[in-house]
Length: 294
Ligand code: UTP
Image (cartoon, rainbow, N blue to C red; front, side, top):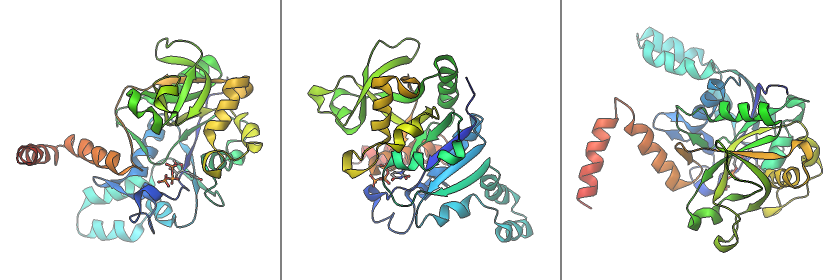
C-alpha cells in the first residue's frame, strides 16, 4: 500500500454562514487569536509529514495565496526595526511545505473540489483537510489515519461522537461493525439524519485519507444535497459497494472546531487563547469575572 504524502485543502467555499465578514475575505483567513484558521490546518498537515499541499481555491482567495508567499518588504521593515520575533512569525507561514494551487471553477460542492485535485494526486492515495476545520495543536489524528490506511487499504474518514440531539447537523455513518481500537468499519453514510433515524452517533469531520479510486466515483457523481457534488455521496458509494477500497472510520476524541460556524469559532478562539502564556492567565481571569457578573 503506497504511503500518502500529498494533502488537498479545499478552500473554495462561499462561507455564507459567516457573512458579512466573508463577503470579500475568505473564511479560512479569519484569525483564531493571531493566526488565520488556514495556517493551523496547514501546520497540522506538515506536522503529519504531508509537505506537498494543494489548495483548491476560488474567486477572491488572493489573501490566502499572499499569506503563504514571502513578504520581503515586510520582513526587511521588521528587520530594520530589530523586531526579529515578528519577522520570524511572518516568515513561518511562507516556509510551510510546498504549496500549490488549482482553481475549482465555481463552488459546486466539496466532492467537486476534491476531484479538481485529480491531476495533482494522480494515482496516489492522498489526505484531505477541510480548510475551516481545526483540531487541537497536539493532535496526531492524520498520522493515526495514515496508519489505518496502510493497514486496511481503505479510504479513511475521521469521526467524532456527538450527543444524539446534535447528529442532525452532521454527516452520520452507518457502521457495519463495532469500534475496535478506535477504528469502525462503515456500511453507509446518511447526511444530516433526523435524530430518531440516525444509524449511529458518529459524525464525519473534515479529515480524510482517500484512495485514488475515489476520483472515478466523483467523476460520475450526480449532484446531491443543495445541488452540489458531495464527497459524502462518493464515500457512501465506496462504503456500499466496496469500490475504491471501501471506507473505515477513525474516532477522534480530542478538541476540534468547525471554524466556519460562528459559535464554534468563538469557542476555538477562547480555547486557543486560554492555552497561551501571553494571553491565557489574563483572559481566564477576565472570563471568570465576566461570567460571575452576568
Ligand atoms: P463548507 O460547506 O463548510 O463551506 O465546506 P462553505 O460552503 O464555504 O460554507 P457555508 O456553509 O456557505 O458557510 C467545507 C470546506 O470545503 C470547502 C470550503 O471552503 C470549506 O473549507 N469547499 C466547499 C470548497 O472548496 N468548494 C465547495 O464547492 C464547497
